Amino acid sequence: MLISLIITTYNRPDALHLVLKSIETQSMGPLEVIIADDGSDQRTLDLITSYKKQSNLKILHSFQVDRGFRASKSRNKAIAQASGDYIVLVDGDMVLHHEFIRDHFNNSELGCFVQGSRVLLSKSKTSKVIKQQILNLNFMSSGLQNRKNSVHWNFLSSFFSAKRNYSKGIKTCNFAFFKKDCFNINGFNNNFEGWGREDSEFSIRLMNSGIKRKTLRFNAIQFHLWHKENSRNSLKQNDDIMQKTINEKLSWCDNGINIFL
Image 1: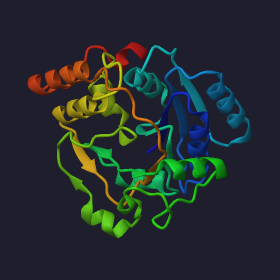
Image 2: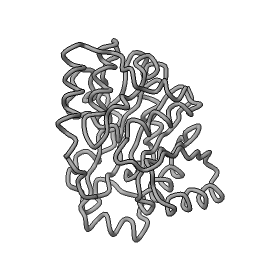
Image 3: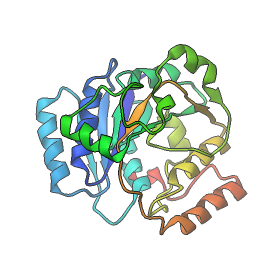
């Protein structure tokens, strides 16, 4: 099974640089890294260009012009370019545990998508991590706001990870699925613009199509660098789109990844 790791980013090259460095430390690397860029400025392009020259990673830059928060469309564009048959999604402010890719590989399962968890870093810890380029984050690190999520233990993971279909807690900052399952529901819904619910609605359509949710604990760990919260101005209209999917038990969206295929 070949894994395409997709990183969503927007105008945060310092964080993206740290994420890329954490991919270099993986015990099992991905086939490729695709940066889904939602319209960042020249600084991000310069970082990617520079990093590709010094790295053995296969790095692709999927770019769309800046017209506000359009994560659904950005992800679709990147997924359409993916060569792997299994997709792992992360955000560009997530430092990955060195077993992150291997854990997703080991927990992949036909008929399932995988929801991982994250460890939140404080604002001051984030500044220190970026300034000092700290990658070795763990349970004993200072500045962790939900420390239990930083425990990496395969034995515990086998007991506490579970399959149960519900949309609460869906976060595509740590999320994985088979590409064919994504294509079968036409990917993310491009009608989502502005922050919120695009990841939940995508998951609901996966579940409506017969794909089960698998929630990981104590595996596939990532450390979330602090940032200001995104604007909630679009939440009402995005809630309406999601509610329609729930009410009508939809598994397909008309405006999806098909426009890139």
